Image (cartoon, rainbow, N blue to C red; front, side, top):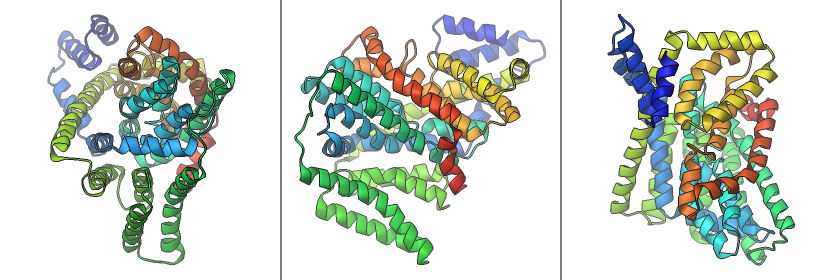
Length: 464
Protein backbone atom coordinates (compact mmCIF):
# COMPACT_ATOMS: atom_id res chain seq x y z
CA UNK A 1 0.00 0.00 0.00
CA UNK A 2 2.86 2.40 0.85
CA UNK A 3 4.37 2.08 -2.63
CA UNK A 4 0.95 2.55 -4.26
CA UNK A 5 0.31 5.74 -2.26
CA UNK A 6 3.74 7.09 -3.18
CA UNK A 7 3.29 6.39 -6.90
CA UNK A 8 -0.22 7.89 -6.80
CA UNK A 9 1.04 11.14 -5.27
CA UNK A 10 3.98 11.28 -7.67
CA UNK A 11 1.71 10.78 -10.68
CA UNK A 12 -0.31 13.78 -9.52
CA UNK A 13 2.71 16.06 -9.97
CA UNK A 14 3.43 16.45 -6.25
CA UNK A 15 7.13 17.12 -5.45
CA UNK A 16 9.12 14.02 -4.52
CA UNK A 17 9.83 15.04 -0.91
CA UNK A 18 6.18 15.83 -0.16
CA UNK A 19 5.10 12.62 -1.91
CA UNK A 20 7.43 10.54 0.30
CA UNK A 21 6.38 12.17 3.58
CA UNK A 22 2.70 12.32 2.52
CA UNK A 23 2.50 8.67 1.53
CA UNK A 24 4.04 7.64 4.88
CA UNK A 25 1.54 9.81 6.77
CA UNK A 26 -1.45 8.52 4.76
CA UNK A 27 -0.32 4.94 5.34
CA UNK A 28 -0.17 5.50 9.11
CA UNK A 29 -3.60 7.15 9.10
CA UNK A 30 -5.13 4.24 7.14
CA UNK A 31 -3.60 1.49 9.28
CA UNK A 32 -5.41 1.15 12.64
CA UNK A 33 -3.27 1.62 15.74
CA UNK A 34 -0.43 3.45 14.00
CA UNK A 35 0.53 6.77 15.65
CA UNK A 36 0.76 9.54 13.02
CA UNK A 37 3.20 11.59 15.15
CA UNK A 38 5.91 9.05 14.27
CA UNK A 39 6.23 10.86 10.92
CA UNK A 40 7.47 14.04 12.59
CA UNK A 41 9.65 12.08 15.01
CA UNK A 42 11.39 10.11 12.24
CA UNK A 43 11.79 13.16 10.00
CA UNK A 44 13.50 15.10 12.79
CA UNK A 45 15.72 12.17 13.78
CA UNK A 46 16.60 11.65 10.10
CA UNK A 47 18.40 15.00 9.95
CA UNK A 48 19.67 14.92 13.56
CA UNK A 49 23.09 13.73 12.43
CA UNK A 50 26.57 15.19 12.94
CA UNK A 51 27.82 14.29 9.41
CA UNK A 52 24.89 16.21 7.91
CA UNK A 53 26.32 19.43 9.38
CA UNK A 54 28.78 19.26 6.49
CA UNK A 55 25.96 19.85 3.97
CA UNK A 56 25.35 23.59 4.58
CA UNK A 57 29.06 24.33 4.90
CA UNK A 58 30.02 22.60 1.64
CA UNK A 59 27.15 24.41 -0.09
CA UNK A 60 28.37 27.71 1.40
CA UNK A 61 31.97 27.05 0.34
CA UNK A 62 30.87 26.30 -3.23
CA UNK A 63 28.67 29.41 -3.37
CA UNK A 64 31.49 31.59 -2.01
CA UNK A 65 33.92 30.28 -4.63
CA UNK A 66 31.32 30.77 -7.34
CA UNK A 67 30.60 34.38 -6.39
CA UNK A 68 34.17 35.48 -5.65
CA UNK A 69 35.38 35.35 -9.25
CA UNK A 70 37.15 32.03 -8.64
CA UNK A 71 35.45 30.42 -11.65
CA UNK A 72 37.14 32.90 -14.00
CA UNK A 73 40.53 32.06 -12.52
CA UNK A 74 39.92 28.33 -12.92
CA UNK A 75 38.82 28.85 -16.51
CA UNK A 76 41.96 30.90 -17.34
CA UNK A 77 44.20 28.28 -15.71
CA UNK A 78 42.61 25.47 -17.74
CA UNK A 79 42.87 27.64 -20.86
CA UNK A 80 46.64 28.06 -20.36
CA UNK A 81 47.10 24.35 -19.75
CA UNK A 82 45.09 22.72 -22.57
CA UNK A 83 43.55 25.51 -24.67
CA UNK A 84 46.17 25.00 -27.40
CA UNK A 85 45.07 21.41 -28.12
CA UNK A 86 42.72 20.56 -31.01
CA UNK A 87 39.20 21.19 -29.76
CA UNK A 88 40.88 23.28 -27.09
CA UNK A 89 37.83 24.74 -25.34
CA UNK A 90 36.33 21.26 -25.02
CA UNK A 91 39.43 20.16 -23.11
CA UNK A 92 39.32 23.39 -21.09
CA UNK A 93 35.73 22.55 -20.17
CA UNK A 94 36.74 19.17 -18.74
CA UNK A 95 39.87 20.38 -16.91
CA UNK A 96 37.96 23.34 -15.46
CA UNK A 97 35.28 21.00 -14.14
CA UNK A 98 37.93 18.77 -12.53
CA UNK A 99 39.30 21.77 -10.65
CA UNK A 100 35.91 23.24 -9.75
CA UNK A 101 34.73 19.81 -8.55
CA UNK A 102 37.28 20.14 -5.75
CA UNK A 103 35.33 23.09 -4.37
CA UNK A 104 31.63 22.83 -5.18
CA UNK A 105 30.75 19.18 -4.45
CA UNK A 106 27.64 19.31 -6.64
CA UNK A 107 27.02 18.83 -10.35
CA UNK A 108 24.40 21.59 -10.48
CA UNK A 109 26.83 24.21 -9.07
CA UNK A 110 29.39 23.20 -11.70
CA UNK A 111 26.86 23.41 -14.53
CA UNK A 112 25.42 26.74 -13.38
CA UNK A 113 28.70 28.41 -12.38
CA UNK A 114 31.56 27.31 -14.61
CA UNK A 115 29.16 26.07 -17.31
CA UNK A 116 27.86 29.58 -17.96
CA UNK A 117 31.38 30.83 -18.78
CA UNK A 118 32.34 27.76 -20.80
CA UNK A 119 29.26 27.61 -23.02
CA UNK A 120 29.48 31.32 -23.87
CA UNK A 121 33.20 31.04 -24.71
CA UNK A 122 32.66 27.95 -26.90
CA UNK A 123 29.78 29.58 -28.78
CA UNK A 124 31.91 32.72 -29.34
CA UNK A 125 34.66 30.52 -30.86
CA UNK A 126 32.26 28.93 -33.34
CA UNK A 127 31.48 25.62 -31.61
CA UNK A 128 28.02 24.14 -32.04
CA UNK A 129 25.81 24.97 -29.09
CA UNK A 130 24.89 21.28 -28.80
CA UNK A 131 28.54 20.24 -28.48
CA UNK A 132 29.19 22.93 -25.86
CA UNK A 133 26.15 21.82 -23.86
CA UNK A 134 27.05 18.11 -24.15
CA UNK A 135 30.62 18.42 -22.90
CA UNK A 136 29.53 20.81 -20.12
CA UNK A 137 26.83 18.40 -18.94
CA UNK A 138 29.18 15.40 -18.99
CA UNK A 139 31.98 17.21 -17.16
CA UNK A 140 29.53 18.51 -14.53
CA UNK A 141 29.07 14.93 -13.29
CA UNK A 142 32.65 15.14 -11.96
CA UNK A 143 31.45 17.57 -9.26
CA UNK A 144 30.18 14.93 -6.80
CA UNK A 145 32.83 12.31 -7.72
CA UNK A 146 36.00 14.31 -7.02
CA UNK A 147 36.04 15.38 -3.34
CA UNK A 148 34.40 17.13 -1.61
CA UNK A 149 30.98 15.69 -2.42
CA UNK A 150 27.55 16.28 -0.92
CA UNK A 151 26.13 12.92 -2.14
CA UNK A 152 29.05 11.13 -0.45
CA UNK A 153 28.18 12.87 2.83
CA UNK A 154 24.54 11.74 2.54
CA UNK A 155 25.50 8.18 1.57
CA UNK A 156 28.14 7.94 4.32
CA UNK A 157 25.57 8.99 6.93
CA UNK A 158 22.90 6.59 5.64
CA UNK A 159 25.19 3.57 5.13
CA UNK A 160 27.40 4.21 8.18
CA UNK A 161 30.53 4.47 5.99
CA UNK A 162 33.55 6.73 6.50
CA UNK A 163 33.03 9.96 4.53
CA UNK A 164 36.80 10.44 4.39
CA UNK A 165 37.21 7.03 2.74
CA UNK A 166 34.48 7.92 0.22
CA UNK A 167 36.26 11.19 -0.60
CA UNK A 168 39.53 9.37 -1.25
CA UNK A 169 37.72 6.71 -3.30
CA UNK A 170 36.48 9.35 -5.74
CA UNK A 171 39.89 10.70 -6.80
CA UNK A 172 41.10 8.01 -9.23
CA UNK A 173 37.65 7.37 -10.78
CA UNK A 174 37.33 11.14 -11.27
CA UNK A 175 40.65 11.20 -13.13
CA UNK A 176 39.54 8.23 -15.27
CA UNK A 177 36.28 9.98 -16.18
CA UNK A 178 38.13 13.18 -17.09
CA UNK A 179 40.53 11.27 -19.35
CA UNK A 180 37.70 9.47 -21.16
CA UNK A 181 35.90 12.79 -21.69
CA UNK A 182 39.06 14.40 -23.09
CA UNK A 183 39.48 11.42 -25.46
CA UNK A 184 35.89 12.00 -26.59
CA UNK A 185 36.64 15.69 -27.20
CA UNK A 186 39.73 14.67 -29.23
CA UNK A 187 37.56 12.29 -31.28
CA UNK A 188 35.09 15.06 -32.16
CA UNK A 189 37.97 17.45 -32.92
CA UNK A 190 39.53 14.92 -35.31
CA UNK A 191 36.17 14.04 -36.89
CA UNK A 192 35.24 17.69 -37.52
CA UNK A 193 38.80 18.80 -38.30
CA UNK A 194 38.84 21.41 -35.55
CA UNK A 195 42.02 23.31 -34.78
CA UNK A 196 43.22 24.80 -31.52
CA UNK A 197 41.44 27.83 -30.08
CA UNK A 198 44.49 29.57 -28.63
CA UNK A 199 48.03 29.84 -29.90
CA UNK A 200 50.61 27.65 -28.20
CA UNK A 201 52.63 29.80 -25.79
CA UNK A 202 55.58 28.47 -23.81
CA UNK A 203 55.33 31.15 -21.06
CA UNK A 204 51.65 30.33 -20.43
CA UNK A 205 52.27 26.58 -20.53
CA UNK A 206 55.23 26.83 -18.17
CA UNK A 207 53.25 29.00 -15.76
CA UNK A 208 50.33 26.53 -15.78
CA UNK A 209 52.70 23.58 -15.26
CA UNK A 210 54.37 25.42 -12.37
CA UNK A 211 50.96 25.93 -10.81
CA UNK A 212 50.19 22.23 -11.22
CA UNK A 213 53.57 21.32 -9.73
CA UNK A 214 52.87 23.64 -6.78
CA UNK A 215 49.55 21.91 -6.08
CA UNK A 216 51.16 18.45 -6.23
CA UNK A 217 54.44 19.36 -4.58
CA UNK A 218 53.08 21.40 -1.68
CA UNK A 219 51.39 18.50 0.21
CA UNK A 220 54.29 16.16 -0.61
CA UNK A 221 56.73 18.71 0.79
CA UNK A 222 54.71 19.13 3.98
CA UNK A 223 54.48 15.33 4.36
CA UNK A 224 58.25 14.97 3.92
CA UNK A 225 59.00 17.68 6.50
CA UNK A 226 56.58 16.25 9.07
CA UNK A 227 57.13 12.49 8.58
CA UNK A 228 60.75 12.30 7.50
CA UNK A 229 62.27 15.22 9.43
CA UNK A 230 59.88 15.08 12.39
CA UNK A 231 58.89 18.75 12.31
CA UNK A 232 55.77 19.89 14.26
CA UNK A 233 52.71 19.41 11.99
CA UNK A 234 50.81 22.61 12.88
CA UNK A 235 53.85 24.89 12.60
CA UNK A 236 54.97 23.22 9.38
CA UNK A 237 51.57 23.60 7.71
CA UNK A 238 51.34 27.24 8.83
CA UNK A 239 54.80 28.06 7.45
CA UNK A 240 54.03 26.19 4.22
CA UNK A 241 50.82 28.23 3.79
CA UNK A 242 52.77 31.47 4.25
CA UNK A 243 55.23 30.32 1.55
CA UNK A 244 52.28 29.44 -0.71
CA UNK A 245 50.72 32.89 -0.35
CA UNK A 246 54.07 34.60 -0.94
CA UNK A 247 54.65 32.56 -4.11
CA UNK A 248 51.16 33.45 -5.34
CA UNK A 249 51.86 37.14 -4.67
CA UNK A 250 55.21 37.09 -6.49
CA UNK A 251 54.27 34.99 -9.53
CA UNK A 252 50.60 36.09 -9.84
CA UNK A 253 49.27 32.56 -10.28
CA UNK A 254 45.79 32.08 -11.72
CA UNK A 255 44.36 29.30 -9.59
CA UNK A 256 46.91 27.75 -7.20
CA UNK A 257 45.09 28.84 -4.05
CA UNK A 258 41.58 27.75 -5.19
CA UNK A 259 42.95 24.40 -6.42
CA UNK A 260 44.48 23.87 -2.96
CA UNK A 261 40.96 23.52 -1.47
CA UNK A 262 40.60 19.73 -2.00
CA UNK A 263 44.29 19.25 -1.11
CA UNK A 264 43.79 20.91 2.27
CA UNK A 265 40.53 19.00 2.84
CA UNK A 266 41.93 15.56 2.01
CA UNK A 267 45.19 16.27 3.86
CA UNK A 268 43.37 17.46 6.97
CA UNK A 269 41.03 14.47 7.04
CA UNK A 270 43.65 11.80 6.37
CA UNK A 271 46.03 13.21 9.01
CA UNK A 272 43.29 13.50 11.61
CA UNK A 273 43.45 17.29 11.92
CA UNK A 274 39.69 17.50 11.34
CA UNK A 275 36.70 15.32 10.50
CA UNK A 276 34.87 15.68 7.15
CA UNK A 277 32.27 17.85 8.90
CA UNK A 278 34.94 20.11 10.35
CA UNK A 279 36.64 20.02 6.94
CA UNK A 280 33.53 21.62 5.43
CA UNK A 281 33.94 24.50 7.89
CA UNK A 282 37.63 24.74 6.98
CA UNK A 283 36.65 24.98 3.29
CA UNK A 284 34.34 27.90 4.13
CA UNK A 285 37.09 29.66 6.08
CA UNK A 286 39.49 29.15 3.16
CA UNK A 287 36.92 30.54 0.71
CA UNK A 288 36.33 33.58 2.95
CA UNK A 289 40.07 34.25 3.20
CA UNK A 290 40.44 34.11 -0.58
CA UNK A 291 37.32 36.16 -1.32
CA UNK A 292 37.59 38.88 1.32
CA UNK A 293 41.28 39.18 2.15
CA UNK A 294 43.37 37.87 -0.75
CA UNK A 295 41.54 38.48 -4.01
CA UNK A 296 39.14 41.05 -2.46
CA UNK A 297 36.37 40.13 -4.84
CA UNK A 298 33.71 39.48 -2.18
CA UNK A 299 31.70 42.31 -0.65
CA UNK A 300 29.44 42.35 2.39
CA UNK A 301 26.39 42.62 0.13
CA UNK A 302 27.51 39.61 -1.94
CA UNK A 303 28.21 37.64 1.23
CA UNK A 304 24.67 38.23 2.54
CA UNK A 305 23.23 37.05 -0.81
CA UNK A 306 25.47 33.96 -0.76
CA UNK A 307 24.31 33.13 2.77
CA UNK A 308 20.64 33.48 1.80
CA UNK A 309 21.16 31.24 -1.25
CA UNK A 310 22.92 28.70 0.97
CA UNK A 311 20.05 28.69 3.49
CA UNK A 312 17.54 28.13 0.69
CA UNK A 313 19.53 25.26 -0.87
CA UNK A 314 20.26 23.68 2.52
CA UNK A 315 16.59 23.78 3.52
CA UNK A 316 15.65 22.04 0.26
CA UNK A 317 18.29 19.32 0.64
CA UNK A 318 17.56 18.62 4.31
CA UNK A 319 13.80 18.54 3.74
CA UNK A 320 14.36 15.88 1.07
CA UNK A 321 16.59 13.95 3.50
CA UNK A 322 13.97 14.19 6.26
CA UNK A 323 11.13 13.07 3.98
CA UNK A 324 13.20 10.23 2.53
CA UNK A 325 14.15 9.19 6.07
CA UNK A 326 10.56 8.52 7.11
CA UNK A 327 9.82 6.85 3.77
CA UNK A 328 12.88 4.61 4.05
CA UNK A 329 11.99 3.74 7.65
CA UNK A 330 8.46 2.83 6.58
CA UNK A 331 9.82 0.61 3.81
CA UNK A 332 11.90 -1.23 6.41
CA UNK A 333 9.09 -1.38 9.02
CA UNK A 334 6.58 -2.79 6.52
CA UNK A 335 9.04 -5.47 5.38
CA UNK A 336 9.50 -4.15 1.84
CA UNK A 337 13.30 -4.02 2.08
CA UNK A 338 13.47 -7.52 3.54
CA UNK A 339 11.22 -8.88 0.78
CA UNK A 340 13.32 -7.21 -1.94
CA UNK A 341 16.55 -8.55 -0.39
CA UNK A 342 15.14 -12.06 -0.22
CA UNK A 343 13.93 -11.88 -3.83
CA UNK A 344 17.28 -10.64 -5.12
CA UNK A 345 19.24 -13.28 -3.17
CA UNK A 346 16.91 -16.00 -4.51
CA UNK A 347 17.48 -14.72 -8.03
CA UNK A 348 21.28 -14.53 -7.76
CA UNK A 349 24.13 -14.71 -5.27
CA UNK A 350 26.74 -13.61 -7.78
CA UNK A 351 28.06 -10.11 -6.89
CA UNK A 352 28.64 -9.17 -10.54
CA UNK A 353 25.04 -10.01 -11.47
CA UNK A 354 23.71 -8.03 -8.52
CA UNK A 355 25.89 -5.03 -9.47
CA UNK A 356 24.53 -5.20 -13.02
CA UNK A 357 20.93 -5.24 -11.77
CA UNK A 358 21.68 -2.49 -9.23
CA UNK A 359 23.19 -0.31 -11.95
CA UNK A 360 20.11 -0.69 -14.13
CA UNK A 361 17.84 0.10 -11.17
CA UNK A 362 19.85 3.17 -10.11
CA UNK A 363 20.08 4.52 -13.66
CA UNK A 364 16.30 4.22 -13.91
CA UNK A 365 15.65 5.75 -10.48
CA UNK A 366 18.13 8.55 -11.20
CA UNK A 367 15.96 9.70 -14.10
CA UNK A 368 12.99 10.31 -11.77
CA UNK A 369 14.39 11.17 -8.34
CA UNK A 370 16.74 13.88 -7.11
CA UNK A 371 20.06 12.25 -6.01
CA UNK A 372 19.61 13.02 -2.31
CA UNK A 373 16.15 11.46 -2.24
CA UNK A 374 17.32 8.49 -4.33
CA UNK A 375 20.25 7.79 -1.99
CA UNK A 376 18.10 7.90 1.15
CA UNK A 377 15.55 5.53 -0.41
CA UNK A 378 17.95 3.08 -2.09
CA UNK A 379 20.52 2.70 0.71
CA UNK A 380 18.19 0.79 3.12
CA UNK A 381 17.19 -1.51 0.23
CA UNK A 382 20.53 -2.21 -1.48
CA UNK A 383 23.16 -1.91 1.27
CA UNK A 384 21.95 -5.00 3.24
CA UNK A 385 22.25 -7.04 0.03
CA UNK A 386 25.78 -5.72 -0.53
CA UNK A 387 26.72 -6.77 3.00
CA UNK A 388 25.42 -10.30 2.44
CA UNK A 389 27.26 -10.60 -0.91
CA UNK A 390 30.51 -9.17 0.47
CA UNK A 391 30.54 -6.04 -1.70
CA UNK A 392 32.58 -3.21 -0.20
CA UNK A 393 30.26 -0.37 0.83
CA UNK A 394 32.78 2.34 -0.12
CA UNK A 395 32.97 0.87 -3.63
CA UNK A 396 29.19 0.57 -3.84
CA UNK A 397 28.78 4.17 -2.67
CA UNK A 398 30.83 5.44 -5.59
CA UNK A 399 28.86 3.25 -8.02
CA UNK A 400 25.58 4.57 -6.63
CA UNK A 401 26.58 8.24 -6.80
CA UNK A 402 27.89 7.94 -10.37
CA UNK A 403 24.65 6.26 -11.49
CA UNK A 404 22.59 9.04 -9.96
CA UNK A 405 24.81 11.72 -11.50
CA UNK A 406 24.19 10.23 -14.94
CA UNK A 407 20.49 10.40 -14.08
CA UNK A 408 20.85 14.19 -13.68
CA UNK A 409 21.39 14.40 -17.44
CA UNK A 410 18.05 12.80 -18.36
CA UNK A 411 14.44 13.98 -18.48
CA UNK A 412 12.04 14.08 -16.73
CA UNK A 413 13.90 15.10 -13.51
CA UNK A 414 17.46 15.82 -14.70
CA UNK A 415 18.36 19.10 -12.99
CA UNK A 416 21.64 19.55 -14.90
CA UNK A 417 19.67 19.11 -18.12
CA UNK A 418 17.27 21.92 -17.22
CA UNK A 419 20.00 24.24 -15.93
CA UNK A 420 22.01 23.91 -19.15
CA UNK A 421 18.91 24.25 -21.33
CA UNK A 422 18.27 27.58 -19.63
CA UNK A 423 21.92 28.71 -19.81
CA UNK A 424 22.31 27.78 -23.50
CA UNK A 425 18.77 28.93 -24.43
CA UNK A 426 18.02 25.54 -26.00
CA UNK A 427 14.86 23.46 -25.77
CA UNK A 428 14.93 20.48 -23.41
CA UNK A 429 14.60 18.16 -26.43
CA UNK A 430 17.68 19.61 -28.19
CA UNK A 431 19.63 19.62 -24.93
CA UNK A 432 18.78 15.95 -24.39
CA UNK A 433 19.96 15.04 -27.90
CA UNK A 434 23.18 17.01 -27.33
CA UNK A 435 23.94 15.01 -24.19
CA UNK A 436 23.34 11.53 -25.69
CA UNK A 437 26.85 11.06 -27.28
CA UNK A 438 28.45 11.89 -23.93
CA UNK A 439 26.76 8.95 -22.28
CA UNK A 440 29.39 6.76 -23.97
CA UNK A 441 32.36 7.92 -21.81
CA UNK A 442 30.13 8.14 -18.74
CA UNK A 443 28.75 4.61 -19.08
CA UNK A 444 32.26 3.37 -19.96
CA UNK A 445 33.52 4.89 -16.72
CA UNK A 446 30.61 3.31 -14.84
CA UNK A 447 31.47 -0.17 -16.17
CA UNK A 448 35.14 0.17 -15.20
CA UNK A 449 34.32 1.57 -11.75
CA UNK A 450 31.71 -1.15 -11.12
CA UNK A 451 33.85 -4.13 -12.09
CA UNK A 452 37.35 -2.91 -11.19
CA UNK A 453 36.89 -2.12 -7.47
CA UNK A 454 40.65 -1.84 -6.93
CA UNK A 455 40.56 1.46 -8.86
CA UNK A 456 38.13 2.80 -6.26
CA UNK A 457 39.56 1.21 -3.12
CA UNK A 458 43.33 1.61 -3.67
CA UNK A 459 43.63 5.05 -2.07
CA UNK A 460 41.23 4.43 0.86
CA UNK A 461 43.04 1.17 1.71
CA UNK A 462 46.42 2.92 1.62
CA UNK A 463 45.27 5.57 4.08
CA UNK A 464 42.74 3.73 6.25
